[in-house]
Image (cartoon, rainbow, N blue to C red; front, side):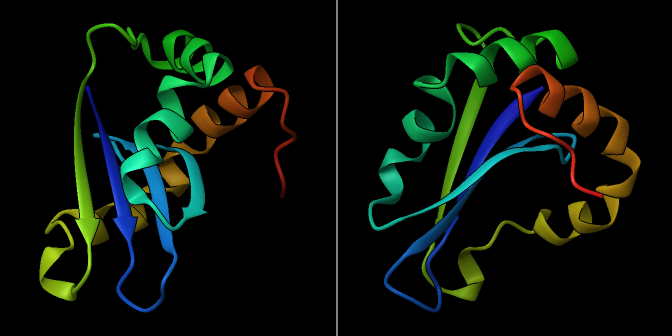
Length: 108
């Protein structure tokens, strides 16, 4: 498994950054003006997210491979990005467990 950080800044000054696993599971999202902060803000400095991802997916924060994409125009968006949009429903049970572990309620 791998972590991708995708920061989309195509249409604004702010970047919409997403932390996503290679199976399409989105574990965090936020807005920033400095996309290079995304790894720390979404995962590295978030022990509750690290613990939850370790329990749900067996991720070791010390050894997980990561890759970052900073998107400033459409050509920079990873080619696989849109295929994960349709995968979200199949990941619902993982979202329920993950959100429980980080003390966030699942919204229906």
